[in-house]
Length: 240
View 1: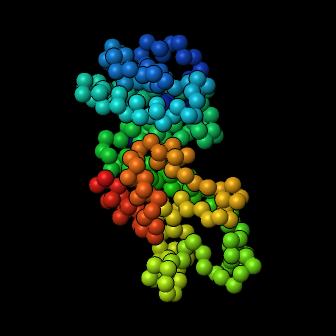
View 2 (view 1 turned 180 degrees about the horizontal axis):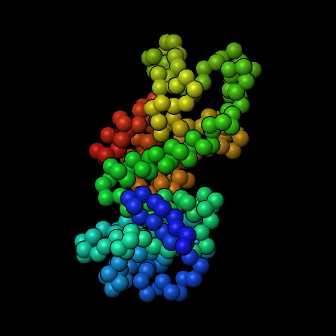
View 3 (view 1 turned 90 degrees about the vertical axis):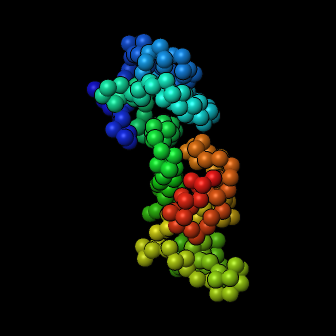
């Protein structure tokens, strides 16, 4: 039996035949609390061929509501062995498939802070994978592509001591290996004109986890709190 392990000791079984599981599990695309009450288990069937990416956010939002109702009716999440459901036509190399699994994983966290922490870290990993080791900014002789042909060496990880006045200094969270020690989401989401001309632009509405699990005010915080360590950002998110 092939399984996909996720957090909190839950796992998915990877199957090929859906029919034999229909009596015990509910299809994620249109799951209803009355079906879960009838089966007395919160178990999912996810057939990726039957799903569209544009429906992922709505699906996860609905799943969150159903999970809360299941808890009110004292219905167990998963079976006795912590299996949470069954995956059909799942491709472990498919970014979209994995994003939906990450979203379900986030929902299974009991505490809101733990859910936010998971979503934050997963999104940081995704953004980091787009940059680290790839020289996307086309650095040469300590200048990025945006500054090429100028005398400026001020990059995204430098800030002014007094807003836009005074000396520009390296961000104190920039490590010796040029990685961000602050894990700052706003900095990771930022793309300059040079990158946007290359077709690289990160928008919260295009990022499933951020777009699904944070409200509009929290999204502003994620976008605007530049040069700020994750711990401070998390404290603000939890309050909003």
